[in-house]
Length: 252
Ligand SMILES: O=C[C@H](O)COP(=O)(O)O
Image 1 (cartoon, rainbow, N blue to C red):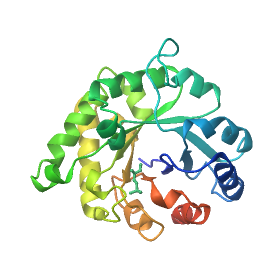
Image 2: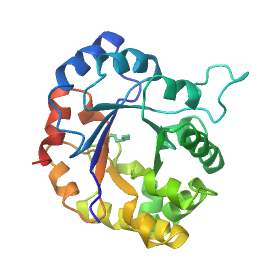
Image 3: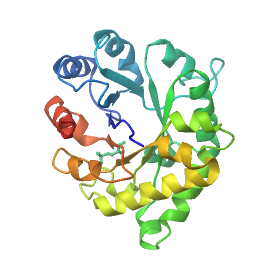
Image 4: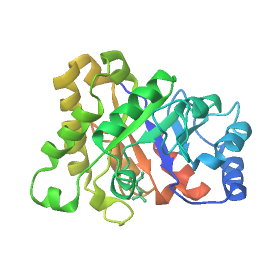
């Protein structure tokens, strides 16, 4: 089964609108065809509308970094998946470790978000990953299996086939200390085995799994050569156009 690679930048809370627009202008006509790779930028919600406008008709796809699970209502400060979908955005990152840690998101919240995002025709990028303490205790597999099982609760096989899961060990995020490609592949394999246990091998063969954590142009090829890794979720190295474009050089 050949799965289309997906490289997604996660800008986190960085850039101004002008910087975001300059980035789009620099990359939009220089990325590989979306027949070969899905190229995505996860931008702050404020920038998604203008970025969608300026990247229209190109191979650059957009992602939000979060959304709420209701489509409308009295939820001050939140963004609905329906409103995000309406902008022409295709993905929403959910369950990033920063949201779990600083905004106390639970697996149950993340599962509700996944369902709402799918109901609005968008693709969730569902993040999972363990702390250094869990890694050192040898409990990564158990931890990640628990997060994935809870995050996917009550989704159908078809819905799971189409989603993206990102494995990001927390100890490798923004630290410059990436997991070795063997560790990353092994845990992405655990994610795939969990999907297989829950939904069968056909779904497990289709679901795309990214590695994230200090991915850079210098190490992306190594990760992309691994059996269970179908892409990368990239923070720091996605912020500059030159470095983001270099991440895509593995596509020959
Ligand atoms: O979502 C992206 C990750 O948190 C990775 O960030 P990083 O590439 O800066 O380590």
